[in-house]
Length: 157
Image (cartoon, rainbow, N blue to C red):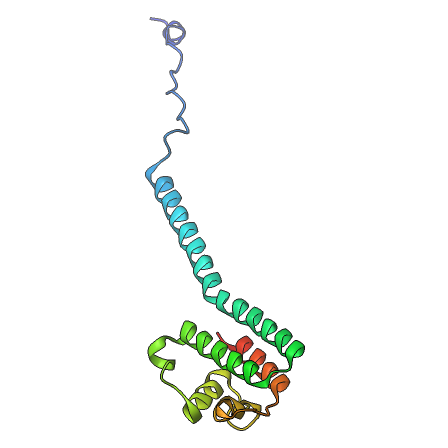
């Protein structure tokens, strides 16, 4: 036997078929599921965050309406009642009914000061939200009260 003859009789190398791209390996499926879950959690977090801050937008809008109404009719009592009501509703929305619904007088003003990191309610124009409300023709610094209420709303988390 001639060695050159035996090499010529060999068949060519058979390559295996190419590896297909589909279906992907299990790791890619896990990565895709993890990304979908992460995207869903992110979207939900954004929606909840937006919903939590929506009360501030609504409160600011109502406060602007109160300011316009006060500028048109100059009714101190109506403005004081509306501002106090707005503050109560905003507090109950954000802090809960159990924590804020029963507050009145100095405790109410102290709560507003604590949550707004200010002293404008207990030692400033906010004092008119307590006992001035119960006088027939109250005299109160409504413009200043509107401003400190706006500041209080913006300081809320």
